[in-house]
Every structure is written in C-alpha cells, then in structure tokens.
Length: 234
Image (spheres, rainbow, N blue to C red):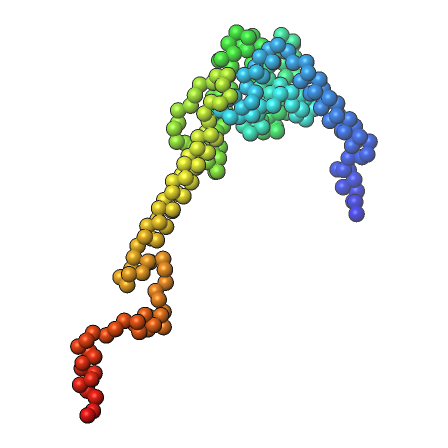
C-alpha cells in the first residue's frame, strides 16, 4: 500500500525513464572518452594501469553520478583529474564537480596537463604518497604481517614492484610451510618412540589374552619344574 507521502518520494515512471536515459548517456560518454583519450591522459594511464603503483588498481573514464572522472581507485577512494587550458574558465563548474565527488566519499587530486608532460614522476610520487597514506590508515585485517619490511620500491614502470599484498602473502605461505614441516617432524618423532614394554608408542599394548598365549609358548625354568615335582604327594 502506498501512502500520499510515499508517492511524493517515489519517482514517477517518467522520472525513472529520464534517470535511466541519463545513466545510459553517461556510460556512453565514458566509453567514447576511453576510445578517444588525449595524449596526456594516455601517458598517465600507461604508468598507473595494471596495479603499477603499490598494487592499487585504477580505472579510467569511470562514470560517477552525472560525471565521468578521468581516473579512479575505488579501493583507496581516490580520484585523479587532469585539467587542461579549458578549465581556467570553469572554476565554478569544477568546484561543484569536486564537491559532488567528495560527497560520495572520494578524495579528488587535480593536476595540470603540463605537470604530467613535464614532471610525470612527481605526479606519480604524489599519487603514491596518497595511496600509502590510505593503506597505513586502513590496514587490511587479512594481512597481519603487512608491516614487515617497511621499505617500499619507488614508483617505476615495473608492474611487479613489491607491495604489502604480495609481502603479506609470502609471509603467510612461509609460515604455513614451516607449520606443516614441524607437524610432520613431531609425528615422525612420536612414531619412533618405544614404551617401556618394548612396544611402539603409536601401537596399542597387547591384550591380556595375547600375553597369556605368548606365555604358554615359553618353557619354565628347570628349577621351577623340580619344585613342582617335589610338592606332589607320594
């Protein structure tokens, strides 16, 4: 049952249709921007794609509400925007855009195109510092050993640079291997121990019936036989 108040809050079919068209148009615009990236955007994308910076994954030309952001790392809640000369005259529009993105919980970093062209290493270092700040303030509960070896490799084009994720995985694998080896060594040691009756500790002792049968097969000493004969009545 829908009340009058609910009907005021719920969008009409026409409104839902307009919203759907808006989403489709934003997605289409994002796809078009991916196919037609500028040289500066492509230059930065080549250096941050494939988790090249501390194993953080970036996405390019991502729809965010009614906007399409240049690059975004969802895990670190970080958006990277590149501004060209056309942004000089749209300061107010950029401010509204940034305010909207921040309302979604994202931090926005803006760089001029010239920064990427002339000092891309400096841009990458600033992005890297922000990612490390996020990692230190939001440690992963599944990586208790992530702090081991605090030194980090500088940002390079190598996608195999060590990271907290890889380092934590290696530590867990090493500990698992050591635990398995220690457990096997303990089991082998227990199997090799022999109890005071001459039986292996891992084997159960013989039952009384088995011990009796074993005793029947042993001849008593000669002195015991002579003593039994001397006790017989004449």
